[in-house]
Length: 234
Image 1 (spheres, helix red, strand yellow):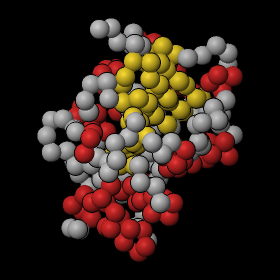
Image 2: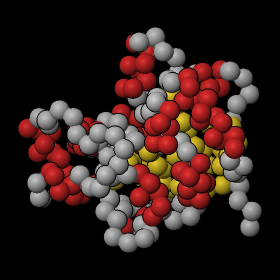
Image 3: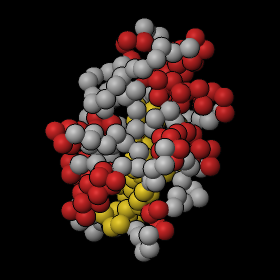
């Protein structure tokens, strides 16, 4: 494998690398990156080529941090093919550490701008999508960088199957209002909520992330929102 600089990809919003990797993590990254990473070689991604065995369906996580949620979902759903997007080198390294230690084989990742991968995914190919505790980009001039945007929601609408879930979590109240406003503007999604408990309590099949735990330690409550992609009309 080439030097790590060769796998950082093109420009995206946010950091590319933080602290230098430990020797063992760097070695794991260099060993497993070619096996589990997704490389786009055309306008469309052929999902059937990603895994050794054909999954029953595909789930997508946009911005998986260091992979805590992604790895737990993959362990709980071994028949599902998981696709994670994360431009942060240290996050990808953390996921690979989990994959190696726990022997998980149903995850593939894309270390670049998630929009590039989303644009390459076939129509109605994803059965569940997650956007968990994304950067809220607090300054008004940076709102355009928020991952929950009309353009990205239109792409998610295209790639999600009918009646599939889009799960979004945040501990930032302003961003929560922003997310709800953007989803309410999009007629393809329905917010699955009846009572406040529906979005103030994390469901049992929604593993915690380290960002959520840090928010709880700081006394910040989180919102757990589930949206349903409407059934497409033939």
